[in-house]
Amino acid sequence: MVSRHLPDEPLIFTMGHELKHHLFDSDLGVSYCDESNEHDAIEIGAEIFAAELIFPEGDFVAWLGAEGIDHNNFKAETLVHMKRKSQTTMSYTALVKRSEYLQYVLKGSFSSVKWKLLEERIYGEPIYKRIIRRRALWK
Image (cartoon, rainbow, N blue to C red; front, side, top):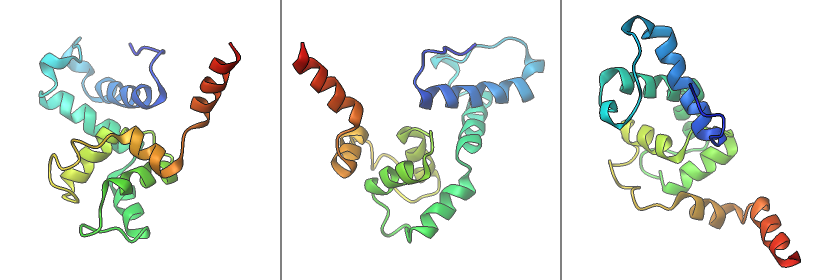
C-alpha cells in the first residue's frame, strides 16, 4: 500500500520500489519496508529498481555528456539543472546517490547543500510561493 497523499517525487519512487517487490519478491511473503530493514539486499534492490525505472543510469550519463559535464566540472548546480531540464521526478537525494555511485562526486560532498534554496537561487521563487504570499496579504 502506498499513501496517496505523498508528493509526486516520493509517490512515484515508492510505486517503483513496491513494483519491484511485486514483480520479483512476491514469493517471499509479506514484508514491510521500514528503517529496520533498509540495508537489506532486497530493499536496496528495490531502491535501485525504482531509480532505474524513473531515470535510467544510461540516460543520466547521456544527459551529462550532452551538457558537456564530466567528473571535472560536476557541481551541485549540475543536479539542479538536470532535474529541471530533464523533468525527472527523482529526488535530489537519489540524484546525489547516483552521482556518488558513478564517482562524479565524492561521497558526502553534497551533504550540506540545501537543494530547494539552490533551486530558487538559480530559477527564482516558484509561483506557488508567490501566490501564497499574495493570498496572505489579502487576509
